[in-house]
Image 1 (cartoon, rainbow, N blue to C red):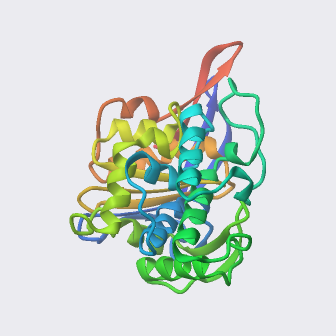
Image 2 (cartoon, helix red, strand yellow; image 1 turned 30 degrees about the vertical axis):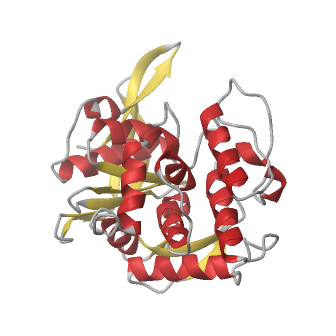
Length: 303
């Protein structure tokens, strides 16, 4: 049975959302499961750490904040944009090589528009850099049959332990792989459990060390990682979350109707169910509703 999220305004439940949730302990044993966690799902950008891993395995040499940016759905803040440009420059490329759509940044202090501001541009810049290193074609790097995308798919299938059930096109134009929440959880566990210096551990360590580079200074994803030391988390469109703690405790969350407002409260509940806690986590446990500029309700997981 799916988990229920209530939207409560002035004491009245005016809306509800259903959530699929899967969590496992440090040994990979299921702790909690709600909804159809074994059927194919659309993780969207939650797959970026696995895509980055596939690139590292094929020679990408990014480290630190730039590796975190390769895993990011960034807010287009100035440091994000500068980082994308550094990745491109390191490969001897211009912004025109990017094939992601043009977009405005989430950072409303910036009014520019372009491909470099699109939230997936870090991943695309890293894909291009990987192609340069391997002498692979640049103008077709998003095609499913391209060597880069075949390598990424092989990495996804290896770590999830599943064959990709179906493929499609993500919002940024890159291939999208449909796998189960069980598979995504299994794949995320492999990241911190990789040996010291392994590609898997490099992805985990970079995202942990630079949470603001994976999303944005003020985004819930970064707040959650700062609130729970040792936690790595990546969100995806249509309200998907995947997370893993440094000891292998992990989980995935999918809000059935794609409503992002319900995602963080469910993720906090899942973390607590695994015994994870930390500074400021209580603040993220419920989403506030406003009326007339003041709080009048909340978004909460049904008790």
